[in-house]
Amino acid sequence: MESVLQALQPLLEQFRTAAVETDRSGRLPLEHLRELGRAGIYRLAVPAERGGLAAPPELVWEVNESLAAACGSTHFVQAQHQGGLGFLLRGNPELLREDYLSGQRLCGVAFAHLRRPRSPVSVETTSEGWIFRGEAPWFSGWGLMDDVVLAGRDEQGQDIYTLVPLAQKSIESRESPPLSAIQASATVSLRLHDLMVPRAALVLTQTLEEMARRDFRSQLGYTVLPLGVVRAAAPFLKDERVRRSLQEKAAELRRRALAWAEDPAEALEIRASANLLALQAAQAAVVSCGGQANQLHHPANRLLRESSFYFLTQLNAPLCEAALEKLIPRS
Ligand SMILES: Cc1cc2nc3c(=O)[nH]c(=O)nc-3n(C[C@H](O)[C@H](O)[C@H](O)COP(=O)(O)OP(=O)(O)OC[C@H]3O[C@@H](n4cnc5c(N)ncnc54)[C@H](O)[C@@H]3O)c2cc1C
View 1 (cartoon, rainbow, N blue to C red):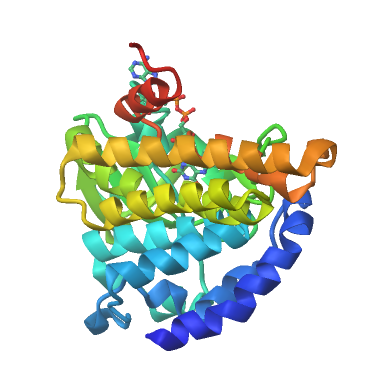
View 2 (cartoon, protein in one colour; view 1 turned 180 degrees about the horizontal axis):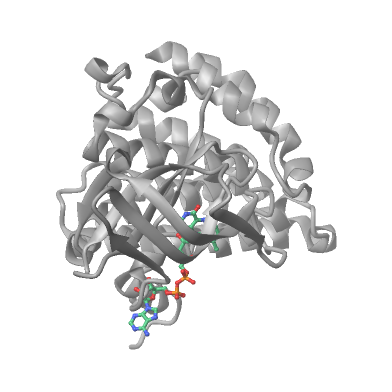
């Protein structure tokens, strides 16, 4: 297990050094995702009987936070693959192939649109499977991923999650306008033209209420993103006391996240606090670096943009409310 952390150190250094260049590019190098696979990162949270390492949560957290600190875009895209594997593991482990774990094959996700009041992706049930129609507004990893865990809503209001190869005529990508952060995530929307999906590709079905319950866990898990920003911003702060105070606050949020006892309000509080702390840390790094930090590709500028973006991931109505309350308390 420790060997994963060891194998990761030179990779993290390499990603950190290349982070500015990666941020400038439209798509991060595929080799980043392959190297993470070779280091064993996609096996970390997977049970041993499924080919994984069943690593303790503290180790999984440390790996993810370090990676988020080294390169936001690389972390974000590999997290989509890990998210895809999480769905397969939970819903249909038979679909969890060895080449996904080794990183030789990659699988993104397109399901966040289900949180909108009206799903922009509809599903018609047929005797052989399903027909997907509409446009999934967010898919990261176009040109990097081979497959997608794609979800849509059927006639009964049930959400259908399926595993679908991306290279087919019924899936058309549409480039998004330039992004403020993680441009290298190769994020597009997916237009689905009567996409036929066979029953064998079913990952899971769930209701919107079940998704809302599970959202708390994933919102908490993705606290590694803002805490990664805090970690990366700290070295830019010249005042030792300020740096220490920041690191102590981050350590406390990390401790609370790892000790989380399934209380939804606590998950929102931790995530929203971490988002605010990251924004403050990145802004403090900008101030410490002075005018040069206003250059788009200065590392502190990148951290500021990433910290702002991390308010949006896993955004649903409760997280939106918690974040706004943190930003501008009502009383
Ligand atoms: C760069 C980028 C990459 C992304 N990559 C992926 C990806 O690879 N896969 C993926 O699945 N997702 C991805 N996302 C989606 C992301 O996780 C969030 O879901 C998304 O940013 C939230 O914004 P939205 O525009 O989809 O939702 P919005 O429409 O802005 O809504 C946000 C939330 O507010 C609530 N809400 C909105 N309107 C109403 C209303 N009228 N009434 C009540 N509540 C309402 C809903 O709960 C909704 O979820 C990506 C997003 C970005 C910006």
